Length: 422
Image 1 (cartoon, helix red, strand yellow):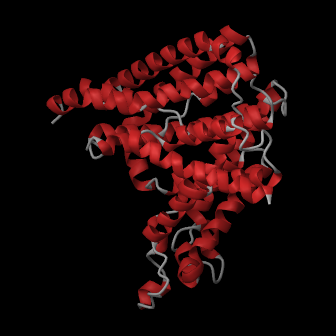
Image 2: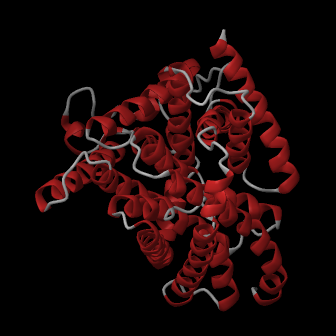
Image 3: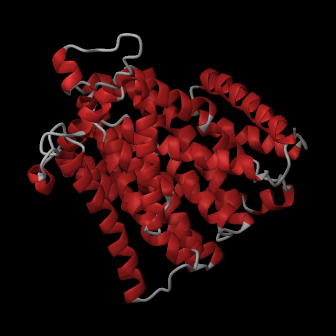
């Protein structure tokens, strides 16, 4: 019974968080964390969640990362890479080095600084997209630049998670052979996913499978067409298999979940023998848009948010500790804002060819920190005890201010942007 009570309380917190997010136009993630902190400090939730809730939360973050990859159009992503590579590179490198340097100055801990740098690297794609949509700017060239570079940042951050986390948690020694082995495992996984995307998932198999009798013209669309009523289940099995594969290689399952979402394409759901023959199950079509809505609902409404509420429940209010880290929060927030805006704006201007007003809008849009940052915090603070309480408090509050800055800065810059961008 305590399990059901805890889950019900968490879902009530999720519902309240949605209302607060809608009223403030901020990402719900911030309010999920807030509700978790309020509930645990009020004694409504236990400080240590039971095994079921922890497992439920882990499934939630896997679904969130899959959904983020699933909503990204592979073709649009690849088309924008050429113009946005510089924004992603310099817009990710600058906050990483800034967060690492500031945290090392404050705490003089190499592993902790690595994790903090990693947590502050990935941009909040969903937060920026919502902010741009609310201002009617989601179709602008600057928005495309932000989205593409943010996704590139996230993919690079996932690769860094695979490399840095084993080092920071002590699972691997800091020497050339150990780091090289971690990099080989990470590269091996991404190559495996690329091969899966190119040779196995297409409508018609390519590569070596093309010459296998019976498999030459068999691909993902055929599987989906034969399982019309169970497509969502087939997708979830596929996601979990890729997540398990990434975990077996020493990577976090979230890495595999995101890549699984990225390589699934809309055309896989619209082609195949069933649609060609006109044999469509109208009662349970489970087309791409329908599955995407279902995945988003599960990931962002009732399973995924449990992860953030449970993470927020790790914030046990300690006013002495909070007061002691206020200087750390101020310095880290100001330096990260400056580094992110300057690096992304300059890169957009001189490597992407955007004008001044577009470039500055891109810099503002890259400020947010959301899902992946909190995945890193969970791995480092909850699962492996790499971060100190002071560092955890600092990062959580810094992330809040960075996220708050996104809708505010976009709204304030919009009049200048609209007047000067054709």
